[in-house]
Length: 277
Image (cartoon, rainbow, N blue to C red; front, top):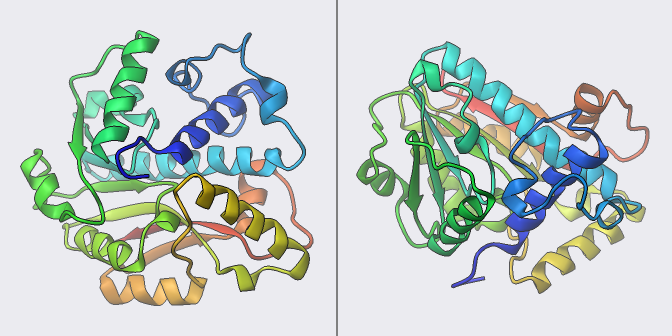
Protein backbone atom coordinates (compact mmCIF):
# COMPACT_ATOMS: atom_id res chain seq x y z
CA UNK A 1 0.00 0.00 0.00
CA UNK A 2 1.18 3.55 -0.73
CA UNK A 3 2.91 5.21 2.22
CA UNK A 4 3.40 1.93 4.10
CA UNK A 5 6.08 -0.77 4.13
CA UNK A 6 5.19 -3.94 2.23
CA UNK A 7 3.08 -6.39 4.26
CA UNK A 8 3.73 -9.21 1.81
CA UNK A 9 7.48 -8.61 2.18
CA UNK A 10 7.10 -9.17 5.92
CA UNK A 11 5.19 -12.38 5.27
CA UNK A 12 7.94 -13.65 2.97
CA UNK A 13 10.52 -12.84 5.65
CA UNK A 14 8.51 -14.81 8.20
CA UNK A 15 8.39 -17.77 5.82
CA UNK A 16 12.20 -17.64 5.55
CA UNK A 17 12.43 -17.50 9.34
CA UNK A 18 9.97 -20.40 9.67
CA UNK A 19 12.10 -22.45 7.29
CA UNK A 20 15.04 -22.10 9.68
CA UNK A 21 12.99 -23.32 12.65
CA UNK A 22 10.67 -25.91 11.11
CA UNK A 23 12.86 -27.29 8.32
CA UNK A 24 16.24 -26.62 9.88
CA UNK A 25 17.20 -24.39 6.95
CA UNK A 26 17.55 -27.52 4.82
CA UNK A 27 16.98 -25.72 1.52
CA UNK A 28 18.29 -22.27 2.44
CA UNK A 29 20.28 -21.47 5.57
CA UNK A 30 20.03 -17.84 6.69
CA UNK A 31 21.46 -16.81 10.09
CA UNK A 32 19.76 -13.40 9.90
CA UNK A 33 16.29 -14.66 8.93
CA UNK A 34 15.06 -14.85 12.53
CA UNK A 35 16.65 -11.73 14.07
CA UNK A 36 15.53 -9.42 11.24
CA UNK A 37 11.89 -10.28 12.03
CA UNK A 38 12.53 -9.92 15.76
CA UNK A 39 12.32 -13.61 16.58
CA UNK A 40 14.45 -16.35 18.09
CA UNK A 41 14.28 -20.07 17.39
CA UNK A 42 12.98 -20.65 20.93
CA UNK A 43 10.17 -18.10 20.75
CA UNK A 44 9.16 -18.41 17.08
CA UNK A 45 5.41 -19.17 16.75
CA UNK A 46 5.98 -22.46 14.98
CA UNK A 47 2.33 -23.51 14.97
CA UNK A 48 1.33 -20.32 13.13
CA UNK A 49 3.67 -21.10 10.23
CA UNK A 50 3.31 -24.88 10.11
CA UNK A 51 -0.37 -25.18 9.33
CA UNK A 52 -1.68 -27.46 6.56
CA UNK A 53 -0.87 -25.81 3.24
CA UNK A 54 2.02 -23.73 4.61
CA UNK A 55 4.78 -26.21 3.85
CA UNK A 56 4.95 -25.81 0.07
CA UNK A 57 4.87 -22.02 0.26
CA UNK A 58 7.52 -22.01 3.00
CA UNK A 59 9.78 -24.26 0.94
CA UNK A 60 9.18 -22.30 -2.27
CA UNK A 61 10.23 -19.05 -0.58
CA UNK A 62 13.39 -20.81 0.62
CA UNK A 63 14.01 -22.36 -2.80
CA UNK A 64 13.78 -19.09 -4.70
CA UNK A 65 16.38 -17.51 -2.40
CA UNK A 66 18.64 -20.54 -2.77
CA UNK A 67 18.26 -20.52 -6.57
CA UNK A 68 18.96 -16.79 -6.80
CA UNK A 69 22.03 -16.92 -4.58
CA UNK A 70 23.44 -19.98 -6.37
CA UNK A 71 23.08 -18.11 -9.67
CA UNK A 72 24.66 -15.02 -8.12
CA UNK A 73 27.64 -17.07 -6.94
CA UNK A 74 28.14 -18.36 -10.48
CA UNK A 75 27.97 -14.78 -11.79
CA UNK A 76 30.64 -13.67 -9.31
CA UNK A 77 32.90 -16.46 -10.57
CA UNK A 78 32.45 -15.01 -14.05
CA UNK A 79 33.61 -11.61 -12.80
CA UNK A 80 30.40 -9.79 -11.79
CA UNK A 81 31.03 -7.39 -8.93
CA UNK A 82 27.65 -5.62 -8.67
CA UNK A 83 24.56 -7.35 -7.29
CA UNK A 84 21.26 -5.46 -7.34
CA UNK A 85 18.36 -6.71 -5.21
CA UNK A 86 15.10 -5.34 -6.61
CA UNK A 87 12.19 -5.11 -4.17
CA UNK A 88 14.48 -6.37 -1.42
CA UNK A 89 12.02 -6.22 1.49
CA UNK A 90 13.65 -7.95 4.48
CA UNK A 91 15.94 -10.09 2.33
CA UNK A 92 19.29 -10.53 4.09
CA UNK A 93 21.66 -11.22 1.21
CA UNK A 94 23.07 -7.70 1.43
CA UNK A 95 23.79 -8.17 5.13
CA UNK A 96 25.50 -11.53 4.61
CA UNK A 97 27.22 -10.93 1.23
CA UNK A 98 29.33 -14.09 0.92
CA UNK A 99 31.37 -12.43 -1.84
CA UNK A 100 32.97 -9.61 0.14
CA UNK A 101 36.49 -10.87 -0.54
CA UNK A 102 35.83 -10.59 -4.28
CA UNK A 103 34.86 -6.94 -3.84
CA UNK A 104 31.14 -7.39 -4.53
CA UNK A 105 28.92 -4.39 -3.79
CA UNK A 106 25.20 -4.91 -3.08
CA UNK A 107 22.51 -2.38 -4.00
CA UNK A 108 19.03 -2.83 -2.53
CA UNK A 109 16.20 -1.18 -4.44
CA UNK A 110 12.81 -0.68 -2.78
CA UNK A 111 10.10 1.78 -1.75
CA UNK A 112 11.30 4.43 0.74
CA UNK A 113 8.87 3.33 3.49
CA UNK A 114 9.90 -0.32 3.13
CA UNK A 115 13.57 0.64 3.33
CA UNK A 116 12.99 2.77 6.43
CA UNK A 117 11.22 -0.21 8.04
CA UNK A 118 14.12 -2.48 7.10
CA UNK A 119 16.72 -0.13 8.52
CA UNK A 120 14.76 -0.01 11.77
CA UNK A 121 14.50 -3.82 11.81
CA UNK A 122 18.26 -4.15 11.28
CA UNK A 123 19.00 -1.70 14.09
CA UNK A 124 16.54 -3.38 16.46
CA UNK A 125 18.15 -6.76 15.77
CA UNK A 126 21.58 -5.33 16.61
CA UNK A 127 22.96 -6.22 13.17
CA UNK A 128 25.83 -4.03 11.97
CA UNK A 129 25.14 -2.16 8.73
CA UNK A 130 27.89 -3.28 6.32
CA UNK A 131 29.79 -0.78 4.18
CA UNK A 132 29.20 -2.79 1.00
CA UNK A 133 25.39 -2.43 1.24
CA UNK A 134 23.75 0.53 -0.49
CA UNK A 135 20.06 1.49 -0.36
CA UNK A 136 18.36 2.83 -3.49
CA UNK A 137 14.89 4.26 -2.84
CA UNK A 138 12.44 4.09 -5.74
CA UNK A 139 8.78 3.88 -6.69
CA UNK A 140 8.86 1.28 -9.47
CA UNK A 141 5.61 2.50 -10.99
CA UNK A 142 6.72 6.15 -11.21
CA UNK A 143 10.52 6.35 -11.51
CA UNK A 144 13.05 5.12 -14.05
CA UNK A 145 15.22 2.30 -12.69
CA UNK A 146 18.34 3.03 -14.76
CA UNK A 147 18.57 6.66 -13.64
CA UNK A 148 18.10 5.78 -9.97
CA UNK A 149 20.73 3.02 -10.12
CA UNK A 150 23.27 5.23 -11.87
CA UNK A 151 22.70 8.02 -9.33
CA UNK A 152 23.28 5.54 -6.50
CA UNK A 153 26.62 4.27 -7.74
CA UNK A 154 25.76 1.32 -9.99
CA UNK A 155 28.00 1.30 -13.07
CA UNK A 156 25.61 0.31 -15.85
CA UNK A 157 28.53 -0.04 -18.25
CA UNK A 158 29.79 -3.01 -16.20
CA UNK A 159 28.19 -6.45 -15.68
CA UNK A 160 25.58 -6.70 -12.94
CA UNK A 161 23.45 -9.46 -11.47
CA UNK A 162 19.85 -8.69 -10.45
CA UNK A 163 17.76 -10.56 -7.86
CA UNK A 164 14.04 -9.85 -8.16
CA UNK A 165 12.16 -12.16 -5.81
CA UNK A 166 8.52 -12.04 -4.79
CA UNK A 167 7.89 -8.85 -6.76
CA UNK A 168 6.89 -9.45 -10.40
CA UNK A 169 3.34 -10.61 -9.69
CA UNK A 170 2.60 -7.30 -7.89
CA UNK A 171 3.69 -5.08 -10.81
CA UNK A 172 1.99 -4.11 -14.03
CA UNK A 173 3.34 -5.69 -17.21
CA UNK A 174 4.45 -2.25 -18.39
CA UNK A 175 6.78 -1.89 -15.37
CA UNK A 176 7.97 -5.49 -15.64
CA UNK A 177 8.92 -5.06 -19.29
CA UNK A 178 10.63 -1.74 -18.61
CA UNK A 179 12.68 -3.33 -15.81
CA UNK A 180 13.64 -6.33 -17.93
CA UNK A 181 14.66 -3.97 -20.74
CA UNK A 182 16.88 -1.99 -18.36
CA UNK A 183 18.63 -5.17 -17.19
CA UNK A 184 19.06 -6.37 -20.78
CA UNK A 185 20.90 -3.17 -21.65
CA UNK A 186 23.58 -3.85 -19.03
CA UNK A 187 26.61 -5.62 -20.57
CA UNK A 188 26.60 -9.15 -19.20
CA UNK A 189 23.34 -8.36 -17.42
CA UNK A 190 21.46 -11.24 -15.82
CA UNK A 191 18.44 -11.62 -13.58
CA UNK A 192 16.67 -14.18 -11.42
CA UNK A 193 12.99 -13.70 -10.67
CA UNK A 194 9.86 -15.69 -9.92
CA UNK A 195 6.53 -15.44 -11.71
CA UNK A 196 3.15 -17.13 -11.70
CA UNK A 197 1.12 -18.69 -14.48
CA UNK A 198 -2.38 -17.33 -15.18
CA UNK A 199 -5.13 -18.72 -12.90
CA UNK A 200 -6.79 -20.46 -15.85
CA UNK A 201 -3.66 -22.63 -16.25
CA UNK A 202 -4.42 -24.41 -12.99
CA UNK A 203 -6.62 -27.45 -12.59
CA UNK A 204 -10.17 -26.81 -11.41
CA UNK A 205 -9.52 -27.98 -7.84
CA UNK A 206 -6.42 -25.78 -7.49
CA UNK A 207 -8.01 -22.74 -9.10
CA UNK A 208 -10.15 -22.07 -6.04
CA UNK A 209 -7.10 -22.11 -3.77
CA UNK A 210 -5.27 -19.69 -6.08
CA UNK A 211 -8.29 -17.38 -6.13
CA UNK A 212 -8.43 -17.44 -2.32
CA UNK A 213 -4.76 -16.49 -2.06
CA UNK A 214 -5.26 -13.67 -4.56
CA UNK A 215 -8.14 -12.37 -2.47
CA UNK A 216 -6.02 -12.42 0.71
CA UNK A 217 -3.17 -10.37 -0.73
CA UNK A 218 -5.63 -7.97 -2.36
CA UNK A 219 -7.12 -7.32 1.08
CA UNK A 220 -3.61 -6.37 2.24
CA UNK A 221 -3.59 -3.72 -0.47
CA UNK A 222 -1.04 -5.56 -2.62
CA UNK A 223 -3.02 -7.37 -5.35
CA UNK A 224 -1.52 -9.72 -7.92
CA UNK A 225 -1.45 -7.87 -11.22
CA UNK A 226 0.61 -9.86 -13.73
CA UNK A 227 0.89 -13.46 -14.86
CA UNK A 228 2.78 -15.12 -17.71
CA UNK A 229 2.53 -18.30 -19.71
CA UNK A 230 6.06 -19.83 -19.83
CA UNK A 231 6.31 -19.79 -23.64
CA UNK A 232 5.11 -16.18 -23.76
CA UNK A 233 7.68 -15.03 -21.22
CA UNK A 234 10.51 -16.96 -22.88
CA UNK A 235 9.74 -15.28 -26.19
CA UNK A 236 9.62 -11.82 -24.59
CA UNK A 237 12.94 -12.30 -22.83
CA UNK A 238 14.67 -13.48 -25.98
CA UNK A 239 13.23 -10.58 -27.94
CA UNK A 240 14.55 -8.20 -25.28
CA UNK A 241 18.09 -9.55 -25.64
CA UNK A 242 18.50 -12.50 -23.28
CA UNK A 243 19.87 -15.62 -24.96
CA UNK A 244 20.47 -17.94 -22.00
CA UNK A 245 17.25 -18.72 -20.13
CA UNK A 246 16.56 -21.38 -17.51
CA UNK A 247 12.94 -21.69 -16.35
CA UNK A 248 12.13 -24.03 -13.45
CA UNK A 249 8.48 -24.96 -13.03
CA UNK A 250 6.82 -26.41 -9.94
CA UNK A 251 7.87 -30.00 -10.71
CA UNK A 252 11.51 -29.05 -11.33
CA UNK A 253 11.66 -26.94 -8.16
CA UNK A 254 10.21 -29.74 -6.05
CA UNK A 255 12.60 -32.32 -7.45
CA UNK A 256 15.72 -30.15 -7.22
CA UNK A 257 15.20 -28.66 -3.77
CA UNK A 258 12.77 -30.91 -1.91
CA UNK A 259 13.63 -34.28 -3.48
CA UNK A 260 9.94 -34.77 -4.25
CA UNK A 261 7.84 -35.54 -7.30
CA UNK A 262 4.62 -33.65 -7.94
CA UNK A 263 2.10 -36.03 -9.45
CA UNK A 264 -0.91 -33.85 -10.18
CA UNK A 265 -0.65 -30.08 -10.47
CA UNK A 266 1.71 -28.93 -13.23
CA UNK A 267 0.94 -25.21 -13.26
CA UNK A 268 2.26 -22.90 -10.56
CA UNK A 269 5.07 -20.58 -9.60
CA UNK A 270 8.27 -20.53 -11.67
CA UNK A 271 11.87 -19.53 -11.05
CA UNK A 272 13.72 -18.07 -14.00
CA UNK A 273 17.32 -17.13 -14.68
CA UNK A 274 17.95 -15.02 -17.79
CA UNK A 275 21.36 -13.89 -18.98
CA UNK A 276 22.75 -12.00 -21.93
CA UNK A 277 25.13 -14.28 -23.80
